[in-house]
Length: 309
Image (cartoon, rainbow, N blue to C red; front, side, top):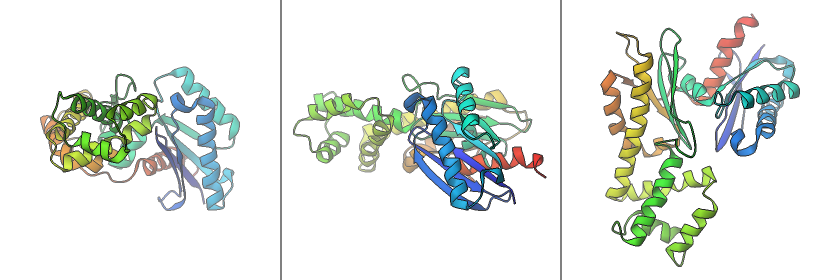
């Protein structure tokens, strides 16, 4: 029997799964983030290699039993030098394992749409849209930078939440919802203490993304400012998918659209607004077929099975 490994990298967590060609799962591993911009190229390659080895060990197989691996790498395709270094380092660590590197958004598309034509929008720690049409033509939109991108993501909303807190703190907006929840939860004697804490951890994407939890709680309590931010996030994600559709949609072809990632916990506050954007190109919304990591495994089967029949 031949086995296939799929890995879905991310800024916060990295998941790996080992399956056979029919999708039966034999092993699964999850570790921390694998963005080379955060942990470095060498550690990124080592993390991926370690996950492949752990999956093989968990399943009780040797690395030579792996027919192929697909790895969704955060930021892949944005820096040719970094892409090549990750590839070369991984080849050196596991020379016996055939693998293919792609952007993690491609794995998200494969899982969410089951390898079918359409566009998937990832709204997790970061945000990005990736799609393919029936001709195999692909498109990517968004996700270009932590500094000026990731619009509509949990990280983006985390930053907006702190901005909203500051405006409520100094009186530009009435103090309710977000301000009260943060002050109650963080145990700060003065709001400046929370601001100081955020200054110290501003570069920690996972931490900042987690601040969005206060926005969700505030929205659930009816905070108009919080709900407005979710609508703004929907507009950012909607613009991504509309732009992607205009680039790859074939006349007469109806594209499926899915959304995956941590922001789906707040779908009741943004999904209807997002779907208004998909109506502009007659997009058909579907819930994700499976997870990004299993999407990477599906890609591995499709890419490497023909070489091992």
